[in-house]
Image 1 (tube, rainbow, N blue to C red):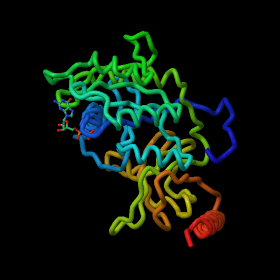
Image 2 (image 1 turned 30 degrees about the vertical axis):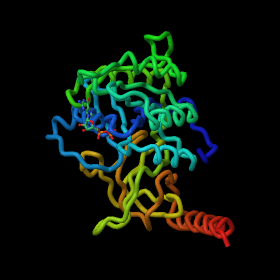
Image 3 (image 1 turned 90 degrees about the vertical axis):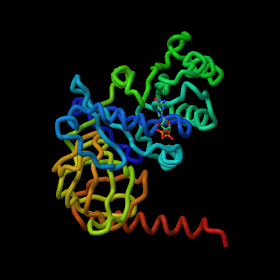
Length: 297
Ligand code: GDP
């Protein structure tokens, strides 16, 4: 994080884990994200009206909440990390049991290790007759990923995103891992967050999905985000509902930006609009100077 200030111990409250799903193309990242989203008890109640905002939350049967980044793709993960935005607490590595470790699987393992983020292996497509989960576990050893069965401490779980089996088990393992991490944040302060995705929307203007990291983002808050500034005009959650507040680990689409920020940009709430513009302008000038000096002549 760019900010050095630390919240006092007694202000910290538990926050949901933020999970990224990685793995080789066609191994079932999208299917698994969809299947996990389908386990949300709240979506079940509201008729399952969902909206793609780049991240979503699942409320489990036990009442726990997990935030999933819905932007699979290693580029997003490594680009955000390169820009200093380490938003992921846990990586779920999807490996198709009928295929094996492929180049992007190994890339994902390396990214995850470099980020120092704990990994859970989801061995997917176990419904297929040719599935061989044990072979996956053995192959993982070659990359120093040692699952519990092999005497290591990496959790693994057999799933079928298609048949929707093993999902509760995966969720339990995510929650167990999250508990070990003791994830906490101060919800009672000005919000700080990270841009997950952003675009110019016809009619709504610049919109950005912000993952709140600490504090609580509120409608009316004045903020700086990357080289842009703004005032929260409205917020929409992953269920397409308008919300007035968003606490730690909550993804929310924010309206009211001066322009489109970049994925990985930090958002900070500031005291007034003059300050917001001042910081945004300063950052813009800094970035322009950097672009000019690093541009090839
Ligand atoms: P991604 O590229 O990693 O996002 O993979 P997708 O989720 O798009 O899945 C790739 C293909 O595998 C699709 O045709 C899915 O229907 C199929 N698939 C995904 N999960 C499973 C599974 O658990 N079992 C079977 N049999 N097929 C699956």
